[in-house]
Length: 168
Length: 100
Length: 348
Image 1 (cartoon, each protein chain N blue to C red):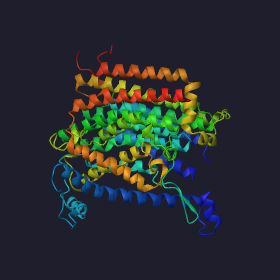
Image 2: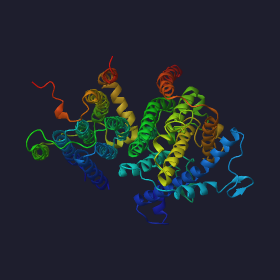
Image 3: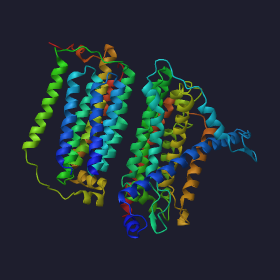
Image 4: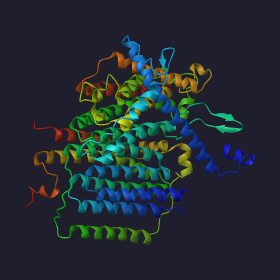
């Protein structure tokens, strides 16, 4: 049962990812990216990470992608020009992509997996709640990265406002 | 029986598709979307390992990556908008004023 | 567990997964049918409420019984279906078509986690009256709410019309701006309840409703919710005197009916969330006779409030609207969280 769900959403994710890269119209690419995000969220739920799944939908599909769609619609570029910079860039890129997958598979096949090291089995996460588990870790072990991230977000906000202002 | 290998393989495939997208497309917005695809592939790896190593660290990492990605997209899109507001074209190859 | 009961008692020998699936399907169909009927008669109720506020009578012809036109929604539906199905020139067909579907779909999704009635045992079979008990239900509601923007922005884009696009962009900006105080207002409730699961939040309000502990949060939530749904006084993006009809301009017939439906179902959804998180969902006051009837009463109260505001208040200008959301509601919501935190710390 788990396998069926995994293969279904994995197939959807891969097809939509290909759609992002291949489609000419940027709005269609953005919609395919939304499909990728939602199918990845489904996979996260399968991996006992429901909090990350909803955060993914909320932040990626619900905010970041809206930003993309806004910019696409405001810049209205139409279709992508087909000029290439290097000769035979496209076949070379696809070859490189295939080589990358092959490399990663090779690394995966020849490395031994580490052994489980923590207390958070899926049963334990279901028991105490995914949000509680992530929150407990975030506010004790990872407090410094958390605070730095909030600073980073502040810097991003200031930077965006400065960049987006017209003139001075 | 699902193992972590399945998820890592899927993550590798998505990452490669994203890489090809960055290399092939000339529209900066689609290149940016491919970069987000690569980021998501990495997130999938993190969550997969978090599940199979029974540690919550992976999920915390992903949470922080989500926040960083949001900030990065905001700033990146602001740069793209500022750049192409003056230039009126959306071909990345034509943004070469700093080329030596 | 109920599944084992069903099998060991020998009534039916079904795979437990199949039982859960059928149960979920039946509940989904019932909820969707109820929502569609509610939408149909909500349009009628709105016309009566607005008519009363404006000293008119409202519809009283079609299938009228004692002056109330019962069959009016059916007449409206037939009219809408038979209108010309219009395709704007050079509109993007795919996006033009899926936008209303997305709007309705995301509006309906939130009802998957609403607890409608306290759990009961019917014929020895334990029934829980919600389609899914997720323990991150509140986050799910916020996520689905943030997806609701897609229908609007794609509707504006697919119409290939500058006015639609402008209306859609304004509406989208308004919705994502008001999502922030909406979420923050709910954080106060989460701090009191200590859980993200709607079923638990409702169960914990069996004696005192959360509005007693979170009056400011309640007001902030309701105002932000009205802005989310694009209702007066926040309906500049789709007002008739502005930008024609905003993102809905180029839509007619069934697609427009879907957008219309999406708006009313959104109204029902935010009312249901307000009723569940602040007014105790299916709990009666002081726990008298809990049941779905209380939930319906509370939702109708909020809907009536929204219709009342529509008939009475002038609309905000766009910059006033955005300023209100960011410079008034957001600091208030943050102050609410701060005060709630301090009070909880002192009480414990």
